[in-house]
Structures are given as structure tokens and as C-alpha cells.
Figure 1: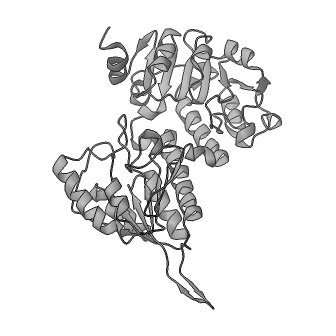
Figure 2: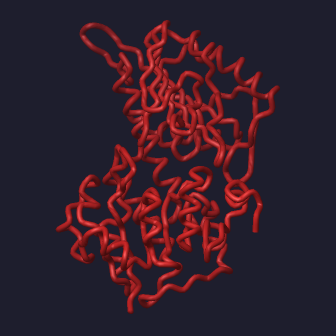
Length: 377
């Protein structure tokens, strides 16, 4: 019997993406899989049930009962996970660094869960990298929010009423989200600077036509991420950054450290020194924010006239293209394991082994296992 690949309607509040698109449904069929999707699952992402001609549209009870592989953007509620067959593969953004109840539910249901946030950041894994694909959309949307909130034009304009100078935009963090934010702000005509504590990002920032802001602090880390700064490095960075922010119109912050709260980069004192009318859009709001004043899901107006925006669900704001990219990531990962309609997991493949969160009633990811079970066997 062919493996059943299933996608459900996302239950998380504000989530508009879907883990299976008509394109990837067709590709899974070509691998020999039987494809099922819960009725209405793709609607908020722009895909009507009728578009899934290569999938069987069904109700949630049927999908859960038949699933051999469950695709998700965010993990379904715990009670749904409990209804899966033992050995079901669950693949998606499973947030291994938080949500202990969800991790226990995946373990207790004896699922083989793959958290694609854990995917090794290698060249071979790029086509499966959900963090990169979704960060690109988040960086794009963050700049559009900044442009909407700002009381200024981004580009320089020559008008009958005089010349309008371009807005000065600073992007903090030059990962995928930050680089997309830089490119978007440049397309809108702003005068753009990029800042990152990793010196190797200078070339990437400058290749997009932005100026690299050098604050004299380097925090090159491993795996493409920045390491955490020492207290002395942070103090020097903040002193220089505070001076620079006094002349900036818009700041978009994108800095993140996997498994930890977002690093605080912009203090309340720095915000107090910014110009009236300045805008901060904090892409890291959902993990605590890069700005001390950020509140996730809220827009804050300070006494000195600075607006601090903490948007949620940025990737979902571009739900159609974000879903298309995300669904391709999942397909590319599962193409390693589905052959001729059957599942075959190669545990010697680092992409499979290192991405596995739970298997056979055990938590396989060591940091998560230590947190949830305290090191218990």
C-alpha cells in the first residue's frame, strides 16, 4: 500500500500558510505516494480545494487516521498528535527549543518527528531550509511595514515643491531576512546601511548596494550564526550604535540566535536619542525582540515620537509565496525518504539523523531531551 502523505488545516492563530500546495501534491504523487489534504487547508494561502487535483480532499478525521506522513507549518494541537498512528512521520517547523507539552505529545504518540529548524546548514540542505525561505519573506514584509508606518518617502524625489531627501534606513542583522530587507529598502529608493557583528557579511551587504556599518565589534560564530557578545563587546557596540541612531529614519532589526531569546541590541536609552518620527520594525518580536521596548503584536509610540513595531506572523503575511517555498522545502526533504511509494529512512544521512526530534517513543535531539526530561533515559 502506498504511503499516505497528509496535510491539515493550520490551527495556530494567525497562521495562513499551508504545508502542501497543488504543485507539491503532484510531485508526491510522482513519488508513488497517496496524497490527502483536509478540506479548506489551503484556502487562506490562496489554494482552493479544487486546485488539489492530485490529492484526495477529506475531513480531518480521515486525514489523521490514514496519515503515514503528516506535513505541517506548525505542529497540530496535542490531542490531534495523540490520534496519529505509531511511526507516523511528522515534518515541519516543530519549535524544538520551546513548547515542552508538544514535544511530549510527539514522543508519546511514538511519531518520527523531523523539526526542519534543526536541519544542518550545508550546501546540500539549502533546498530544504525552511528558516531561509521563510526569513526571506519576513525581511521583505518588515521593510514594507516600515515604509507604511514612516511619515517619509523612502526615495529621493525632485518635485515642484522642492527636493525630498531619501530616508536613511539601517538594517540590523545580515542573515537571509536582513539581506532581503536591505534589497527591498534599496528597491524602494532609500539610503541603506547594514550592520552585523559578523565581519564576513560586509561583502554581502555591499553587493546589494548598501553601506556596511562598522561598529568595531566582531562576533563571528559557527554554522552561519553570530556568537553571543561579551559584556564588554556589547557595551562598545551599544555606545557606537547609539551615536549612529540619532541620524537614522528607519531601523529594521533581524538578529537571532537559535534556541535563545533574541539579543537585545537597541536599548530604551537609544530610542530616546532617536529623531521624532523615526520608526523601528523589530522582526525578532516573537522571540523577545531586538529592541528593549518591543512588544510582540503591538505598535508602541514613545514620548519622543519614535514608533516601535513588533509584528507577528511576518511570513504568513506573504502566505501564497511563503507556502510555495515552504512546501517545496518539505518535499525536497521527504524526497530523501520516499521511494516508489514507500518510506525508507537512511539514518546514516546527516540530514535525516540531525533533524530528527523524536523517534520510537524517545526524544532524539539531545538539547531538547535534556530540557524536557532532565537527561532521563
